[in-house]
Image (cartoon, rainbow, N blue to C red):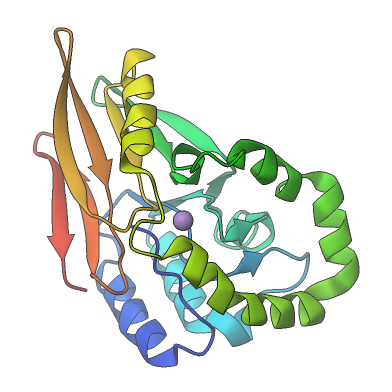
Length: 236
Ligand SMILES: [Mn+2]
């Protein structure tokens, strides 16, 4: 699941979403959070985001204590998820992408912003933002200032990222195809907010593109069961 872009003020959704998470306690071995679960996150040591997202974090913590391993793929609204996610929720956090070998198939898992650069040198921009120096600067400013800034920027980022054609579908699918050509059998992404399961024939190999959609507005997510495969789920 991913791309909920939860705002601190959206307490009603947070309560509803938390109930959904709690209802899944013990149901899954793994929870892949595909990025951009929150509208803004920068992990400061010792800052636990309880005022902003406490309800959701407590529900995730309960899931983890029921034995679900959380895996977090950082999106373009997520920075330094480690302090809360790795430390408190014992999640495995990946900044760019990850490979998993599941039931004899190779999965490539990433948020998707790296795939959707619109002619703009997004990779360079991403490295500039997601680097230790920038993180030091953000730490210097501290959570109070940064969260205020993020609140002001939320509107702007919504215009940039959530415009109807904010991503280049052709480029995006080109990136997916590149992963198939590298030998991956399954490519799992988020970012587009469009839940998808689609098969591609690459030579003799049958490959699968999976997108979890968004769990807030469209209430879609994807499950995987050994022996059954992937399924788009609707409604939380
Ligand atoms: Mn995104």
